[in-house]
Length: 214
Ligand SMILES: C[S@@+](CC[C@H](N)C(=O)[O-])C[C@H]1O[C@@H](n2cnc3c(N)ncnc32)[C@H](O)[C@@H]1O
Image: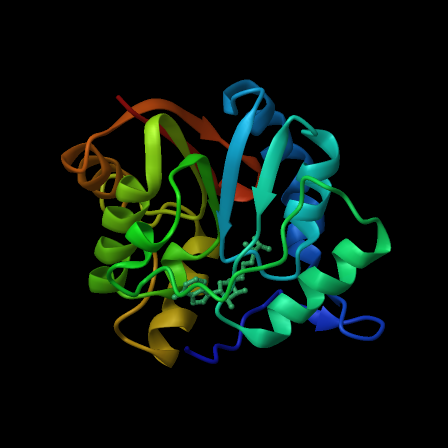
């Protein structure tokens, strides 16, 4: 796993619990979009759960859904576990050690009715992104939704000065990573059978793409 220097890195607060300011800022707008697109019942996998700020809150707000956190980083999983212990819920599972860029993970799990992913694609390479998108499509049950949030290129271009600076700082750390193009991501998902049903402008120039399996 890459160790990147990010402007808004998760920091320890107390014990194992980590806090990411960006996750606190984007939680409400993401939850509002999820409320429009998640099914009322079913199983939801979150890839790259990070600090656990999102999934612990989503489990409380969407109690009809069963939430499965995951992250390959043991420190992230410890934070998720510690957050979950503060307010235990039957609909929140212990975190899985899941590398979403490793081929084959999807067939090791029962199908999910939705998969959520925030703020990872710009931190991984194009080949890793291709594996993640293909595996995600396989992991979804018929009718399942993929809810993807993050910063993206638009029409191949970096739109704002902030995006250009952040993308450059990522590529300086690893030339293989950086912003992916939203149209290219949507086209890849379509090739894997996931149809775009919504593309929502989010605060700070981010996008949320909702796709669905037939
Ligand atoms: C910028 S953080 C985002 C965390 C959380 N989704 C959020 O929005 O606050 C990126 C997360 O991706 C995880 N990650 C890195 N490589 C990954 C991979 N190959 N598969 C799954 N998660 C990965 C990291 O451990 C980290 O928790």
